[in-house]
Length: 179
Image (cartoon, rainbow, N blue to C red; front, top):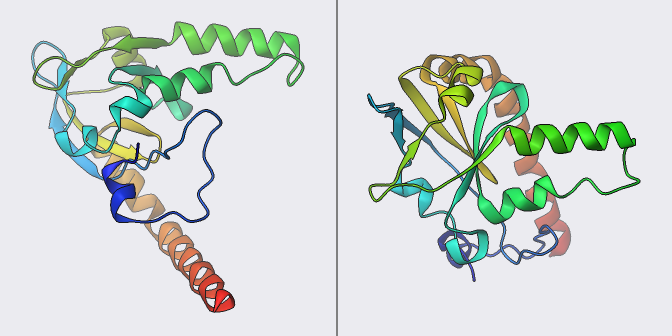
């Protein structure tokens, strides 16, 4: 089943993960406040970008790269967690990856209003305060302190603009070559 985005835009050279037929393409940034019960609303705009049939209706809350708290659709995270196969890494590295992957992940369901209850331990490890920004990052949602996110954007804007320009040039060049 195609996501709403894919119904509008064709992806002729789409490469997907094994076992999935639709690519996740989560986008946008959304300001939210963590309430007094440690809950945060996951915007409808973000949730509607996920095909629940394809990727599951629940999520995994995971402490990801650089200490950023990440929210992965359940079926997608399960593929990631099970992706280290015997023989591809040293046995002790595979065991460490398994321990960390499963210990630092929590399977969660959103409540009826689309809110996520933040695990206090993960929230503390990620240093999340009350004003947060949810960021769609292709296959997952990242939860940032709003000030940290703004600083990250500021620090990386010039690099992003250069990469976007280069990517656009590649697309235009490929289109010209196809004609």
